[in-house]
Length: 243
Image (tube, rainbow, N blue to C red; front, side):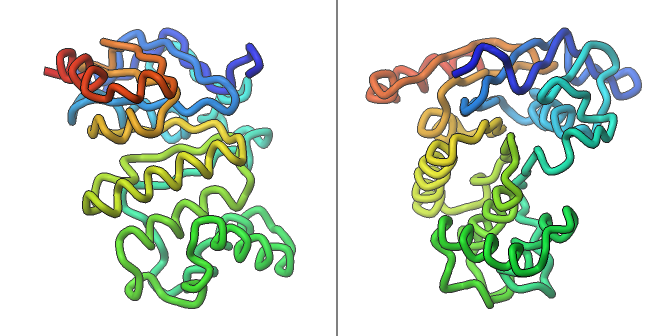
Protein backbone atom coordinates (compact mmCIF):
# COMPACT_ATOMS: atom_id res chain seq x y z
CA UNK A 1 0.00 0.00 0.00
CA UNK A 2 1.10 3.54 -0.72
CA UNK A 3 1.81 5.82 2.22
CA UNK A 4 -0.57 8.51 0.95
CA UNK A 5 -4.05 8.20 2.53
CA UNK A 6 -7.11 8.21 0.29
CA UNK A 7 -9.36 9.36 3.16
CA UNK A 8 -8.03 11.79 5.75
CA UNK A 9 -9.99 13.02 8.78
CA UNK A 10 -7.98 15.62 10.68
CA UNK A 11 -9.09 17.11 14.03
CA UNK A 12 -12.73 17.02 12.95
CA UNK A 13 -15.59 18.12 15.18
CA UNK A 14 -19.24 18.34 14.18
CA UNK A 15 -22.05 19.96 16.15
CA UNK A 16 -25.79 20.08 15.60
CA UNK A 17 -26.91 23.04 17.68
CA UNK A 18 -25.62 22.30 21.17
CA UNK A 19 -25.18 18.58 20.45
CA UNK A 20 -21.60 17.47 19.83
CA UNK A 21 -21.69 14.48 17.46
CA UNK A 22 -17.97 14.30 16.62
CA UNK A 23 -15.19 15.56 18.87
CA UNK A 24 -11.68 16.17 17.50
CA UNK A 25 -11.60 12.97 15.43
CA UNK A 26 -8.54 12.06 13.37
CA UNK A 27 -7.86 8.94 11.29
CA UNK A 28 -6.74 7.91 7.81
CA UNK A 29 -7.67 5.19 5.35
CA UNK A 30 -5.11 4.03 2.82
CA UNK A 31 -5.70 2.73 -0.71
CA UNK A 32 -7.12 -0.82 -0.90
CA UNK A 33 -7.67 -0.88 2.88
CA UNK A 34 -10.96 -2.04 4.41
CA UNK A 35 -11.70 -0.11 7.60
CA UNK A 36 -14.66 -0.65 9.93
CA UNK A 37 -16.11 2.00 12.22
CA UNK A 38 -17.83 0.10 15.01
CA UNK A 39 -19.97 1.51 17.77
CA UNK A 40 -23.34 1.53 19.44
CA UNK A 41 -26.20 3.69 18.23
CA UNK A 42 -25.32 7.30 18.98
CA UNK A 43 -21.55 6.79 18.80
CA UNK A 44 -21.29 9.08 15.76
CA UNK A 45 -20.68 6.48 13.03
CA UNK A 46 -23.27 7.79 10.60
CA UNK A 47 -22.14 11.38 11.08
CA UNK A 48 -18.58 10.38 10.18
CA UNK A 49 -19.77 8.54 7.07
CA UNK A 50 -21.82 11.57 6.00
CA UNK A 51 -18.74 13.76 6.43
CA UNK A 52 -16.78 11.47 4.11
CA UNK A 53 -19.65 11.42 1.60
CA UNK A 54 -19.71 15.19 1.65
CA UNK A 55 -23.34 15.48 2.73
CA UNK A 56 -22.17 17.21 5.93
CA UNK A 57 -19.50 19.81 6.59
CA UNK A 58 -17.44 19.64 9.79
CA UNK A 59 -17.84 22.40 12.35
CA UNK A 60 -14.08 22.42 12.57
CA UNK A 61 -11.21 20.37 11.18
CA UNK A 62 -10.64 18.96 7.73
CA UNK A 63 -12.06 16.06 5.72
CA UNK A 64 -10.22 15.05 2.55
CA UNK A 65 -10.97 12.38 -0.03
CA UNK A 66 -8.14 11.93 -2.53
CA UNK A 67 -6.89 15.33 -1.41
CA UNK A 68 -10.19 17.15 -2.01
CA UNK A 69 -13.01 18.39 0.23
CA UNK A 70 -15.97 16.05 -0.47
CA UNK A 71 -18.48 18.71 0.64
CA UNK A 72 -17.30 21.20 -1.99
CA UNK A 73 -18.82 19.31 -4.95
CA UNK A 74 -15.36 19.14 -6.46
CA UNK A 75 -15.45 17.83 -10.05
CA UNK A 76 -12.33 15.78 -9.23
CA UNK A 77 -14.48 13.58 -6.96
CA UNK A 78 -17.28 13.00 -9.46
CA UNK A 79 -17.87 9.25 -9.62
CA UNK A 80 -15.12 8.57 -7.07
CA UNK A 81 -17.37 7.52 -4.16
CA UNK A 82 -19.78 4.58 -4.30
CA UNK A 83 -22.27 4.05 -1.47
CA UNK A 84 -24.41 1.11 -0.41
CA UNK A 85 -26.94 1.88 2.33
CA UNK A 86 -28.69 -0.08 5.07
CA UNK A 87 -31.89 0.45 3.10
CA UNK A 88 -30.98 -0.66 -0.42
CA UNK A 89 -32.74 2.38 -1.96
CA UNK A 90 -33.50 0.59 -5.20
CA UNK A 91 -36.05 2.34 -7.40
CA UNK A 92 -39.14 0.07 -7.43
CA UNK A 93 -40.10 0.88 -11.03
CA UNK A 94 -36.69 -0.16 -12.40
CA UNK A 95 -35.39 -3.70 -12.87
CA UNK A 96 -32.19 -4.88 -11.22
CA UNK A 97 -30.04 -4.05 -14.23
CA UNK A 98 -31.76 -0.68 -14.68
CA UNK A 99 -31.05 0.15 -11.03
CA UNK A 100 -27.39 -0.75 -11.49
CA UNK A 101 -27.18 1.57 -14.50
CA UNK A 102 -28.34 4.69 -12.61
CA UNK A 103 -24.88 5.95 -11.65
CA UNK A 104 -23.53 5.46 -15.15
CA UNK A 105 -26.47 7.35 -16.61
CA UNK A 106 -25.74 10.24 -14.25
CA UNK A 107 -22.12 10.14 -15.40
CA UNK A 108 -23.36 10.06 -19.02
CA UNK A 109 -21.74 6.73 -19.90
CA UNK A 110 -22.86 5.63 -23.41
CA UNK A 111 -25.90 3.28 -23.21
CA UNK A 112 -24.17 0.26 -24.78
CA UNK A 113 -21.23 0.49 -22.40
CA UNK A 114 -23.55 1.15 -19.44
CA UNK A 115 -25.62 -1.98 -20.15
CA UNK A 116 -22.51 -4.12 -20.62
CA UNK A 117 -20.90 -2.94 -17.36
CA UNK A 118 -24.15 -3.32 -15.42
CA UNK A 119 -24.52 -6.91 -16.63
CA UNK A 120 -20.89 -7.61 -15.74
CA UNK A 121 -21.31 -6.34 -12.18
CA UNK A 122 -24.56 -8.20 -11.65
CA UNK A 123 -22.56 -11.30 -12.52
CA UNK A 124 -19.83 -10.41 -10.05
CA UNK A 125 -22.37 -10.11 -7.23
CA UNK A 126 -24.04 -13.39 -8.31
CA UNK A 127 -27.22 -11.74 -9.56
CA UNK A 128 -26.99 -12.31 -13.32
CA UNK A 129 -30.18 -14.41 -13.38
CA UNK A 130 -32.16 -11.64 -11.67
CA UNK A 131 -31.25 -8.84 -14.08
CA UNK A 132 -34.84 -8.33 -15.29
CA UNK A 133 -36.54 -8.68 -11.91
CA UNK A 134 -38.01 -5.75 -9.98
CA UNK A 135 -37.03 -5.02 -6.36
CA UNK A 136 -40.29 -6.43 -4.96
CA UNK A 137 -39.39 -9.77 -6.56
CA UNK A 138 -36.04 -9.95 -4.74
CA UNK A 139 -35.13 -10.98 -1.19
CA UNK A 140 -33.37 -8.57 1.16
CA UNK A 141 -29.99 -10.14 0.48
CA UNK A 142 -30.55 -10.03 -3.28
CA UNK A 143 -31.50 -6.36 -3.13
CA UNK A 144 -28.31 -5.60 -1.19
CA UNK A 145 -26.28 -7.37 -3.87
CA UNK A 146 -27.90 -5.18 -6.54
CA UNK A 147 -27.18 -2.11 -4.39
CA UNK A 148 -23.54 -3.18 -4.13
CA UNK A 149 -23.30 -3.65 -7.91
CA UNK A 150 -24.78 -0.18 -8.39
CA UNK A 151 -22.14 1.30 -6.07
CA UNK A 152 -19.21 -0.48 -7.74
CA UNK A 153 -20.17 -0.30 -11.41
CA UNK A 154 -19.02 3.35 -11.66
CA UNK A 155 -15.52 2.15 -10.69
CA UNK A 156 -15.24 4.38 -7.60
CA UNK A 157 -12.00 4.93 -5.74
CA UNK A 158 -13.85 4.43 -2.45
CA UNK A 159 -16.75 2.20 -1.39
CA UNK A 160 -18.79 3.32 1.62
CA UNK A 161 -21.09 0.81 3.33
CA UNK A 162 -23.75 2.11 5.72
CA UNK A 163 -24.87 -0.79 7.94
CA UNK A 164 -25.37 -2.79 4.74
CA UNK A 165 -25.83 -6.16 6.50
CA UNK A 166 -27.80 -5.16 9.60
CA UNK A 167 -31.30 -5.89 8.27
CA UNK A 168 -30.48 -9.32 6.88
CA UNK A 169 -31.04 -12.67 8.56
CA UNK A 170 -27.90 -14.24 10.09
CA UNK A 171 -27.31 -16.82 7.34
CA UNK A 172 -27.72 -14.29 4.51
CA UNK A 173 -25.58 -11.76 6.37
CA UNK A 174 -22.67 -14.19 6.79
CA UNK A 175 -22.73 -15.18 3.12
CA UNK A 176 -22.96 -11.58 1.90
CA UNK A 177 -20.16 -10.38 4.20
CA UNK A 178 -17.79 -13.00 2.82
CA UNK A 179 -18.71 -12.24 -0.77
CA UNK A 180 -18.41 -8.47 -0.33
CA UNK A 181 -15.02 -8.68 1.40
CA UNK A 182 -13.67 -11.02 -1.29
CA UNK A 183 -15.04 -8.85 -4.10
CA UNK A 184 -13.71 -5.58 -2.66
CA UNK A 185 -10.26 -7.11 -2.22
CA UNK A 186 -10.28 -8.65 -5.70
CA UNK A 187 -10.86 -5.26 -7.34
CA UNK A 188 -8.56 -3.52 -4.83
CA UNK A 189 -11.09 -0.95 -3.68
CA UNK A 190 -10.74 1.17 -0.59
CA UNK A 191 -13.70 0.51 1.71
CA UNK A 192 -14.94 2.34 4.80
CA UNK A 193 -17.97 0.83 6.47
CA UNK A 194 -19.97 1.45 9.60
CA UNK A 195 -21.65 -1.19 11.72
CA UNK A 196 -22.88 -1.84 15.24
CA UNK A 197 -22.31 -5.58 14.77
CA UNK A 198 -18.89 -6.77 15.86
CA UNK A 199 -18.96 -9.85 13.62
CA UNK A 200 -19.22 -7.65 10.52
CA UNK A 201 -16.01 -5.85 11.46
CA UNK A 202 -14.03 -8.94 12.47
CA UNK A 203 -14.88 -10.90 9.31
CA UNK A 204 -14.36 -8.08 6.81
CA UNK A 205 -11.97 -5.39 8.01
CA UNK A 206 -8.21 -4.94 7.82
CA UNK A 207 -8.55 -2.43 10.63
CA UNK A 208 -11.25 -1.72 13.20
CA UNK A 209 -11.87 1.65 14.84
CA UNK A 210 -14.24 1.40 17.79
CA UNK A 211 -16.06 4.67 18.38
CA UNK A 212 -17.47 5.95 21.65
CA UNK A 213 -19.68 9.05 21.83
CA UNK A 214 -19.04 11.65 20.52
CA UNK A 215 -17.18 9.73 17.77
CA UNK A 216 -13.95 9.36 19.72
CA UNK A 217 -11.67 6.42 18.88
CA UNK A 218 -11.80 4.20 21.96
CA UNK A 219 -9.89 1.29 20.40
CA UNK A 220 -7.99 0.58 17.19
CA UNK A 221 -7.27 -2.97 16.06
CA UNK A 222 -5.27 -4.14 13.04
CA UNK A 223 -6.48 -7.52 11.78
CA UNK A 224 -4.78 -10.26 9.82
CA UNK A 225 -5.64 -13.92 9.24
CA UNK A 226 -3.94 -14.94 12.49
CA UNK A 227 -5.90 -12.41 14.55
CA UNK A 228 -9.15 -13.52 12.90
CA UNK A 229 -8.51 -17.09 14.06
CA UNK A 230 -9.31 -15.93 17.58
CA UNK A 231 -12.55 -13.97 17.10
CA UNK A 232 -13.53 -14.49 20.73
CA UNK A 233 -10.57 -12.46 21.94
CA UNK A 234 -11.27 -9.70 19.41
CA UNK A 235 -14.93 -9.57 20.39
CA UNK A 236 -14.01 -9.37 24.07
CA UNK A 237 -11.69 -6.40 23.47
CA UNK A 238 -14.31 -4.58 21.43
CA UNK A 239 -17.20 -5.29 23.79
CA UNK A 240 -15.17 -4.03 26.72
CA UNK A 241 -14.83 -0.53 25.26
CA UNK A 242 -18.38 -0.48 23.85
CA UNK A 243 -20.00 -1.00 27.26
